[in-house]
Every structure is written in C-alpha cells, then in structure tokens.
Amino acid sequence: MEFENILIEKNDRIATVTINRPTKLNALNKATIKELNQAFTDLQSDAEVRAIVVVGSGEKAFVAGADISEFADFDDEQGASLAATGHELLFNFIENFSKPVIAAVNGFALGGGLELAMACHFRIASENAKMGLPEVTLGVIPGYGGTQRLPQLVGKGKAMEMILTAAMLTAEEAKTWGLVNHVVPQSELLGLARSLAAKIANNSPVAVAKAIETVNAGFDKDTDGFMSEIRAFGYCFGTEDFKEGTTAFLEKRKPEFTGK
Ligand code: COA
Image 1 (cartoon, helix red, strand yellow):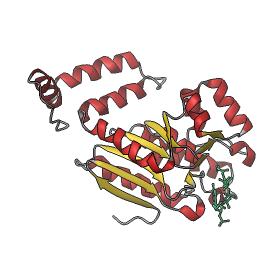
Image 2 (cartoon, helix red, strand yellow; image 1 turned 180 degrees about the vertical axis):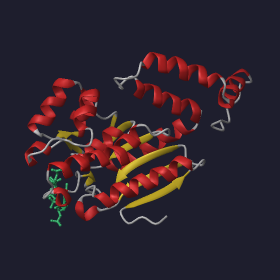
Image 3 (spheres, protein in one colour; image 1 turned 60 degrees about the horizontal axis):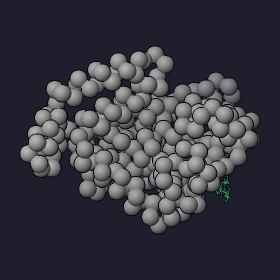
C-alpha cells in the first residue's frame, strides 16, 4: 500500500518506519496516525519482519507532537474522542505489538512525539534530541498516554516536573532519567537502532512476543503480572522455538527460529 506521510523500508528482517512530514516537523495528524496503524497492521502479518525501528525524517525532529492545527477548534467531546482514537489506533497498538518496536529519537520528540516514543518498547536518541511534554503551555494535558507512561519510565516526581514545567530534556538528561537507553551522534543513530533490532531478530519470535506481553502485563492494574509470566513461561515449552533453542544449545550450534 502507498502511504503519503510515512515511509517503510524492509531489510534483513528489520522494518524501518519513517514519519515523513519534515516541513511540519513530522507532527502527527489524523492521516499519519491512520497510516501508521495500517503500516503496523501489515508488519504484524509479515513473517519476514521481526523487529521495527521508528524514526522521524530529516535531522531536526522525531515528531514535534500532535498536529496542533487539527485540534485547535475542538470542543471537549472532540478532544476526548481524539485521545481515545489515538490510543486505540497507535499508542496502545504499538505498546502491545508482538514484535519489538524501537524508537530512534533523532530530534524533537515533543507531546505526541514523546508519547509515541514512550509507547515503543524502548528508546535510543541522537545527541541533538530534545524531549518534553509541552501540552500545559497549550492549555491541555498529554492525551496520548503521556501522563501514564512517563511516570512508568522516569518515576512520578520526575514525570510531574516534566509535565508541569513543560521543560524539554536534552538527550543526555533523558538518558540519566531513564527515558532513553543510549545516546549517540545522529549519524550513528539508525545503525545502533538496527543493530539492536538485529540482535532481537536472532532470538525466538515467540519468546520475544511473550516477553513483551508479560512485561506489559505488570503495568496493567487488572492483570497479575506474575501469573501472566507463569502462563507465558509454560506456553513457551510447547513451541517449536523452544525445542529448537534448547536443541541448538545442546548441539553447540546457532538456533534457527521459525516463530512457531
Ligand atoms: N503541530 C503542527 N505543526 C507543527 C507542530 C505541531 N505540533 N510542530 C511544528 N509544526 C510546524 C510549524 O507550525 C511550522 O510550520 P510552518 O512552516 O507551516 O509555519 C513547521 O512545523 C516548523 O516549525 P517551527 O515552529 O517553525 O520550527 P522551530 O525550529 O522554530 O521550532 C519547535 C521547533 C519544535 C520548538 C516548535 O515547532 C514547537 O514548539 N512545536 C510545537 C511543539 C508542541 O507544543 N507539541 C505538542 C503538541 S500537543
């Protein structure tokens, strides 16, 4: 399928999804969110793809937020619906995606942009990246999961400071705070993202999916994370990947996982 606002590139079992509205600093409008939903739906069923990297086009921005021009005249109901649709189509969808999604934060990640990065399974950043949730400067709060995911990543006090002051963190500060895992020069960012993705792609897709599901379960108030772990652990024993992984270890060879 042809997309207008995003680019998809597939190489060596890794898909790179580029948000491609550089003149608007890759701001997330409705069309882009829909296209991302479609792209991720396609990647889900593409057996050749084992890991996904999300990045913004250009050298300035990952994503500079939700597209402010689209919601400036919304009323309260339209606002709530905007948030709910975004959660469903993109942010919760990515968080619960069964293939690993790495955010390569290559510049400004503000508002919905940081929320997109936080919905990914982990984040790396380039030295020039700046991250923040500036919504209160617009008279609104983060609506794509930021009030929930930021405290999970950096702790409640730091999240409160970021959300209430609307201040931006530098990449190094974001690393110190635990928001990103690595910081590298911009020219090395995609290389690092893809090498991390490649390491994951060598592992059992079934186990990787179950690990994502189980880590997420611990953050779901209605789910017992330990019980989820026990069930998922048991499930793995019935898979071909488990037989292959343990057999390959005993035979002193590299496993060839099929994801079954
Ligand atoms: N929504 C819509 N358009 C946006 C946008 C957003 N979130 N962020 C940037 N843009 C657009 C600008 O309107 C501008 O478009 P124009 O050239 O047609 O006027 C273009 O992207 C370039 O942005 P500009 O503001 O000129 O770049 P800058 O280098 O001066 O500033 C930022 C960069 C990121 C500091 C600034 O763009 C900004 O504050 N953006 C909004 C961030 C925000 O509040 N996000 C949360 C939204 S909920």
